[in-house]
Length: 252
Image (cartoon, rainbow, N blue to C red; front, side, top):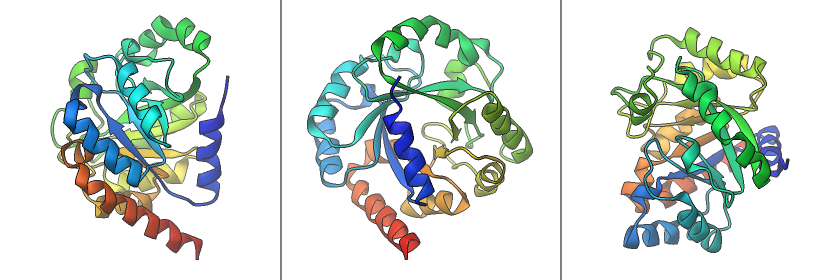
């Protein structure tokens, strides 16, 4: 299988170049709303656009087709379950919900979709998906029937992430959940970063450029912004400019 996108992440990490992904839920991207989002993303393209959600009713195919026609950013699937897979994406984060104990999201959904994914030729990136308490019950917790790791238990988050690395995962994704009141604590990000060799993604509850930069400083390689962009596309330039300045500073 291809590994173009994963290689690009490794290269940027080696260059200490931080990355930004915008997460779009097909159910929230309708009519004029998606037009305004696309207009902003064309002017301020992120490294990646993630597509998916915890409970997506609409097909991801139509949204991906629109995005690929309009944007230069690579489109990466971030599926809540097997039904959200699309062979039109550039890559798939094959998420294993390691923070939970529900076998359906550890391996069950993967078995259901494995043959179709392999036949598609879509780039697959095995990803350790770890939920961190974000101040309220997230949609991911509810739909997966699992519990997030408590915010004050960073040692559990570290052990879970290391277990994922030992299992052969290629990315670790620390997630506070869609619409989280609080982002993943910087102490947790730093503790996990210190024990991992693989790229680290952080998302959930990041609503300001300052919160994004704090995650980068703590050790995140890629930050994912979802609700903030979906509800206020006009924020995209602020995040893009902050990311640009941060990377320029690191190059000096």
